[in-house]
Amino acid sequence: QVQLVESGGGVVQPGGSLRLSCAASGFTFSSYGMHWVRQAPGKGLEWVAFIRYDGSNKYYADSVKGRFTISRDNSKNTLYLQMNSLRAEDTAVYYCAKDGYSYDYWGQGTLVTVSS
Amino acid sequence: SSELTQDPAVSVALGQTVRITCQGDSLRSYYASWYQQKPGQAPVLVIYGKNNRPSGIPDRFSGSSSGNTASLTITGAQAEDEADYYCNSRDSSGNPSWVFGGGTKLTVL
Image (cartoon, rainbow over all chains, first blue to last red; front, top):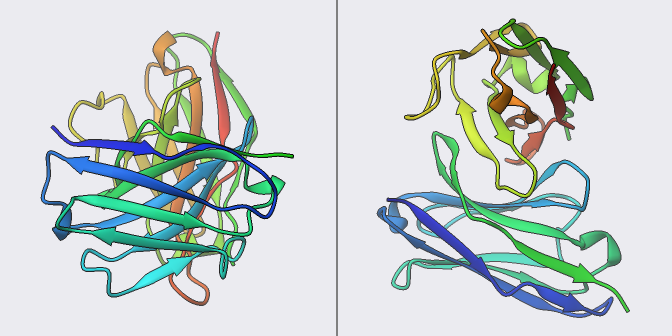
């Protein structure tokens, strides 16, 4: 069965960096685009970034453009999100999601807290 | 970027039918997908495309669309349907991006 497992969340100071990972299994990872979606505490869902199946194209929400970088290693079935220049408003649960029929599978999420 | 607008809260009596709506310009070009999220859990896809349900989603969930409005209908709402519901579509403006509605809290009375 499809499994997506995020890791790498934690507490970081404003201006700091963090790298999230999403380990995928149960499907041919190299055949699907992948998304990162976040949810601030008590708030709604916000799309963050998308990467095509082969990493050839990457797209970002305006709120993270220039600070976050999405990447993937198809040999390791792993998706990444490098987050730099973190701000308090980046505090959220970050989910990775498979791009099949829309976001057809989601991980359980990893919490990122940006605080001094 | 485009926006998708949802009513913040909707309620329905047990066993009755409820419609949750989502409005936005992008819906004139792209179908909405719908996600159910229960407290402390990841979202779950319930409707995608014109009106498609992933495996395991009960057939009481259905979707429709007209103009700039997409709707999720639950026919015969059950207690376990109480959750937040989010619509989502591709953004029709500028570079490829995606947008979520603000979410609708469904209460089953």
